[in-house]
Image (cartoon, rainbow, N blue to C red):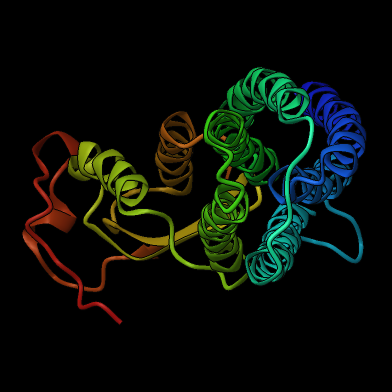
Length: 308
């Protein structure tokens, strides 16, 4: 699985390096701020792809003496850096577009620029789909962020393609910096989304509601075997989930029975949420209630221990 992540991240680095070179040469040749902004955008994509390639390798390392919880947050850190890079690129594009609006300049060889944008859109569509597929399979934030970059690049390439087409037909060169402003807005929006998700992981934000509900469904499925549960906590660390909870058991259960129940809960939660680390704290029921005395087949969790 890790080899797949590294391979697709390497593919992204290679494709972005090729596109940066091509767009930069054509941008300087045509003088199009739209093409040059795309070259800058692809440069940030290249740096982001390199960071993603590094982070997926580091995040896969097992826990060690200094990182007892593993290295999963390398992916969150990667996403934060990538989002910051996109914001910088958006600002640079806005600055250059504003300068071109104030000092109108003409675009040369527009058909050549259109050809480059078409190639860029096709290549990035193919690579981003591959990245998304592997990101979904491995739950990798770093690869998903990289795919998000390339998807935004597809739309901005299409925008520049259309702008150059309009310039070729009408001669309205003002369209070029206007489209560049649109590109900056699109990639800034992508940066905001990526940055938020990365920060959520670094700040140990709770899992999404649908994932928390999946845990609750497993617990309810086994409610006849224990009294209650509480203090459920769950967070995301890169592609991995860490959760812990307290389970209140009838006093009649012995150690072997308690262990079997906890193992069953852990197995089912991992089936619902792969790549999860689960810690269950067992507590004896301290209430003198009917549920604590009944055998498992007749227990209906009618006893509720006070939550602490």
